[in-house]
Amino acid sequence: MAKKEITGYVKLQIKGGQANPAPPVGPALGQRGINIMEFCKAFNEKTKNFIGKPVPVIITVYKDKKFDFIVKSPPASHFIKEAAKLKGGSQEPGRLIVASITKKQAEEIAKKKMADLNAHDLEEAVKIIAGSARSMGIEVKE
Image (cartoon, rainbow, N blue to C red; front, side, top):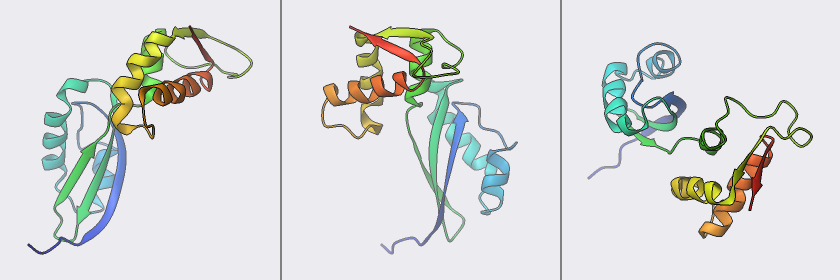
């Protein structure tokens, strides 16, 4: 089978199960000549278990205007805010701590994100999540 020629990649972050032709999806895909409704239906079907959560997606665009896409898990910051029951992080991270999560919560988040993290084991993944929390002004308690 001949290899398809890739013309580019489009990276977007869309709420799970809520892709529609409005910006940012429509303009980003329209300029590449992709069938926007076809993408929206496929994306919404694939992300219905992430309804309302921001989901990063990488779309591979081929020369014949066909496409493939890879759905990642929601960002760690989303899970951290969810665990800390916050709308946003600290205005002054490093100086002002706005909330805290437990090490167990950080472990749960690390397990959800493990496929997307650059870590060899759960212990390293927890450190990455703890670092993300710290940069948001959220401390991780034992």
